[in-house]
Structure formats: C-alpha cells, structure tokens
Length: 83
Image (cartoon, rainbow, N blue to C red; front, side, top):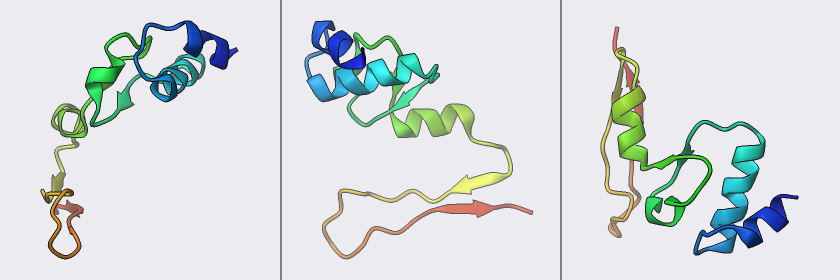
C-alpha cells in the first residue's frame, strides 16, 4: 500500500516518498530531516533538526552545537542537563 502511494505521489525522490507514506500511515506528527525541500509535497510535515530543537527543546536541557560536516577529527556534542 505504501509503495503504491509513494509511486503515485508528487514527491521527487521515491525513497523520501515511501518514508512519508509510512509516516502518514503510522500517524507520525513530524518528519525530521536535513532535506526538507524534498518533503514539500509530503502528507506529513517535515522540519530541519535545528528548527525542531528550537521549537521543542525542554527548558532544562542545553544542547552543544557542533558542525557534523566538519572533516577534522570526530564531531562531538550532545545533551547537558541543567540542575
């Protein structure tokens, strides 16, 4: 069922369309992706990770920011709970 709907969708990438159809069938609220452009016609809204964090970050959590595309060494970062 998802495969057929993905093939008929107006999304440019089949794999993204399949993911969107599965998300829709499973009542997913938001798809988090760095490639929001390909999800413009998705039945489930998509947003970038940074946008998601800005909207839904709990008040007692701080996030370290790092460049995941950096080629020098291993990118590090993560969560830090505030007391």
